[in-house]
Image 1 (cartoon, protein in one colour):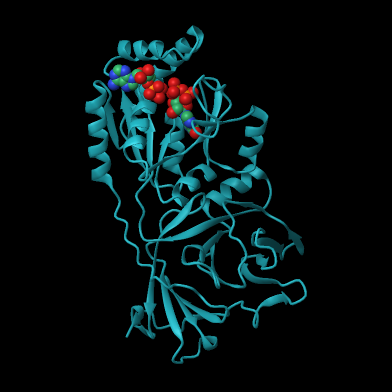
Image 2 (cartoon, helix red, strand yellow; image 1 turned 30 degrees about the vertical axis):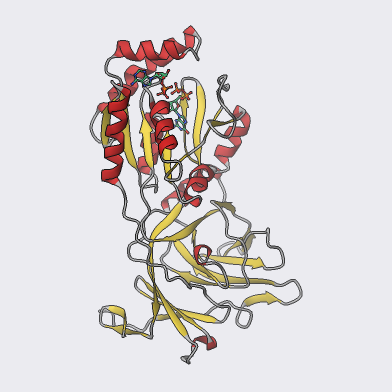
Length: 399
Ligand SMILES: Nc1nc2c(ncn2[C@@H]2O[C@H](COP(=O)(O)OP(=O)(O)O)[C@@H](O)[C@H]2O)c(=O)[nH]1
Ligand SMILES: Nc1ncnc2c1ncn2[C@@H]1O[C@H](COP(=O)(O)OP(=O)(O)O)[C@@H](O)[C@H]1O
């Protein structure tokens, strides 16, 4: 076990690049998976462009430009492409900042398969590799008027640098004090339907007669700001997120009584009588689903606001993820490097075309603890610097 020779993957720097065109400064790498060849390319001439993906189907001999989902990496001066499994290609960008050099191109994951069916064409999705574990996003659900918004606003006010709100899209009209881009992205139904078809959403649901949805970008904006994401979504949305790759904590907020819920909804004064009636009818089903076992990790009763808020804070402190970053400070892959892979470990040999020298350096990526994927981020990536790393019977180890 573990004795087989590690697979050697050539790097795609300027010297060994496949299809590098010195005139246009374009470069590309290609990886074959089953009957398809994925060509990942870029041009460092245009800093605003993103790395492109083309697919060649060996069965019909045709090229296609797939629908590319997720936030796309910008091109660097070169990259290496490593086949991790039949679903994902690891892209290591050279000469990029430490938080922008590891990317995963998903070509046949569960999400990609679903989106391929939805779009009816070839689909791939990008997911950025993040080192260590980040705290899980928090999904807050509950019937209209229970106090979700009030509790979330308190949390964001007390901890503005810790928590960030995932701004949903909705087709409902803005309320008087609501600000576009802050409370919601208010949008038209036909635009939102097109965005759904284009795979821009992590989840969507029809609630009280309007469309609501969490875009991939909304969650990424919070994550990119280094904050813990809070999602205020309905029970259907919570179910979709449970089924997605996003690992979250699910909290359901209950009213102390149905009468109190009705009182709060009316006293808020933001809905017409007809809308209040619809929300109260829906609240019955939401309370049934929300309090039945399996979907939510925690149920909080919002009787007294301060008590409920204190309980929410306690619960979040308990659930706090451990943010362990193993990323070496100076993790930067030079243009000249080579990559070897064995099992879940990827070695990046830097300097002197990978030959050992005084200046040569090796980084090891441990992919065994990866969590999440597109849509969103791939977390749990561990990077060790040092070396030389040698193989031992269990794979690769550092001597
Ligand atoms: N599935 C889903 N539900 C959402 C989203 N954004 C808001 N909601 C839910 O839609 C419902 C109606 O929200 P809103 O119109 O703001 O009314 P409110 O709950 O009375 O404040 C609530 O249950 C929200 O949690 C979203 O992005 N996805
Ligand atoms: N614990 C509470 N006790 C009394 N009123 C509350 C409490 N929590 C929220 N409210 C009030 O109830 C109304 C509905 O709250 P809101 O946060 O808008 O609910 P949601 O976002 O769940 O629809 C608001 O007027 C709010 O001030």
